[in-house]
Each structure stands twice: as structure tokens, then as C-alpha cells.
Length: 235
Image 1: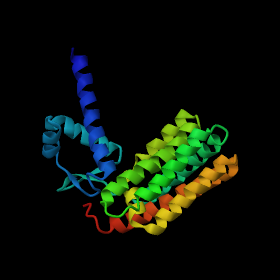
Image 2: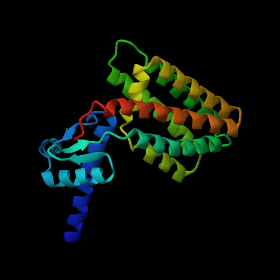
Image 3: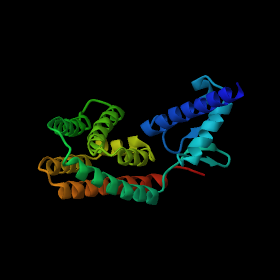
């Protein structure tokens, strides 16, 4: 019975950690924000104990920091961390793109084409909040990249890409698309070049285009954090 109780407790901690992570990734809890155990416990309808353990889990994963006199706060990633992560991601996604060339179907190609077009159009629609546009454009961007990773038919490769994607809050890169017309256009055109290389069966070009695209996105994100780290108080 004790073992069952312990398993249940661990499952609750994992569930709470996943919910907090999702809020951070979506931007509902911005970087630099303080995470108050009492508020989270009330929000989730649990005691402080599983919340405290969940925050400890997220701290171990590098998503939050515990700062003197402030407690747990959402960590502001260092620009060098972003560049390192995206360097690895670029190689992984380049491999996925190359593998996708011989495995892609016409339905997959249409899915990529539609996702890229929808990402471009939804991120630019006037009269809607930036948050809404960022969420939708991020979803379509994820469809584009996840489709290629899935088509690559290497589950370990897809998981490794996803792990890197979940390292940093996802809403930040989406906000860059919404707030920077030039970046949005470049992102759209880079996706097109990746798609066209895959469609014509050129694995080398697909790999090179994807590598350049991811490295460029990483550099944009790193520069954003460079600017942001000078304004967010982290202790």
C-alpha cells in the first residue's frame, strides 16, 4: 500500500510540473516571473508539498532558478545556451530533412505547404492580439517541423529534437515572427526552400537549407535573450 501511495505522489508531482512547464512554454508565466508556492497550490487544488517538489524538478531541468529573497523564478536563458542548443538542433533537423526526402508523401508535402502558408498569414493578420497570432503561428510552425521529423521515420531523432525544443519558452520565437515583418518573411521563404528541396528529392539541399534555417532562428532567439537579460531582474 505504501508503494502505491508513493507512486501516486510521484505521479501528482509530475503532473503539476508538466502543467507549470506548459504555462511557462506558452508564455502564461513569463521569464523572470516569481513562482509562488501558495498561489500555485491553490490554483491546482493541492497542498504546497507536491508544488514544492514540482518546482524542484523544474529547477533540476534548468527551467527555473531559486533566487535569494525571491524564491523560484522562471529562468532567463543565457544567449550562449540558446546558441549551443540550436547548433545541436540544426544538425538533428538537417538529418531529419535529409531522411524525409525518400519517405515523404504527397499528403505530407501538402501538409507542409499549408502549415507554412497558414503560419505566415496568421502571424500577420491585423485586428487580433499579438498573443493570439503568436500562438497560432507557433502551432503551424510546429506542424511544419514536426511533420518532417515524423516523416524521417526515426523515433529517437524526433524525440531528441523535441527535447531541445522544450528547453526554452516557445512563445518567444513565435513573438519574433509576429513582431518582425522581415523575420517573418525570411522564415516563410526558408521553409519554402526546405520544402522545395524535399519535393525535388535533393537530400543534400534539404539538409543544408534546414541547417541554415535552424541556426538563423537560434541566432534571432539568442539576440532577443541578450536584449532581454539586461532588463529582467534575476537576482
